[in-house]
Length: 310
Image (cartoon, rainbow, N blue to C red; front, side, top):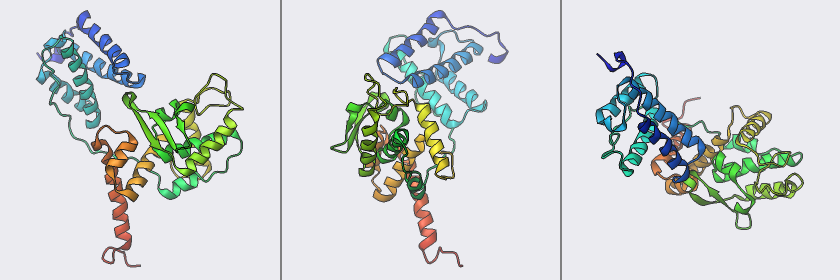
């Protein structure tokens, strides 16, 4: 009888309690974002459901082959190789925690690889499209705010969460720098370009008329409260439409544009890694593919043996 034909077995209350404890560990000790903690929870729920059908009632019953079967079943159900890879990373982290706490002797998810899948390159506005979007002339404080936040996203490569979390004390405009709290609560200092600094100064001159006394967020809404991530997404998309940018623009695309355009000019991958706050240069290397596309287009247009005959 196969596992799916057996009567499902519920996991023990003690096993389920470890999931709750792991969630508290992620939030308090590792200080991960609520979004990341929820993602880990979804991955462990999927594992728990698979264990139920596989007649596994405790984490100590899971071995290397079980985790491999879980990954294969997940992939066969339609999850991409990249998503399976992320799910396996969540499992490794969970089992590492159980080993640390003495609930397991070894981590059964170590050295298990997800199926490979093609890595999609991020859609990135070109330099002309970014120039068109940022050529808007602000009409009132809210448009001054929108221009400032878009300039900052493009100038400094901030994540959306980093942008909305910025406080007034994080700005160092005299030095043209901003202090950012990134993933894993890692702090980094990033430069702010001359144009972005000017846009920020123009917004800050008008911010005081809207801000509540107790609100220290750099970017606020019309009612004086901190601007949320969804509001930024809507404003960016609306401005892109108004300025005739022919794509659905979202804030993370400014980060892609920042990295791609900087790499095209500097070819300094390590510098781009530091500015983006990537812990691994492998994450940054996707932009080398974008850079190569740019070089290939230049070659096709310029090389005597590549140019198409008119």
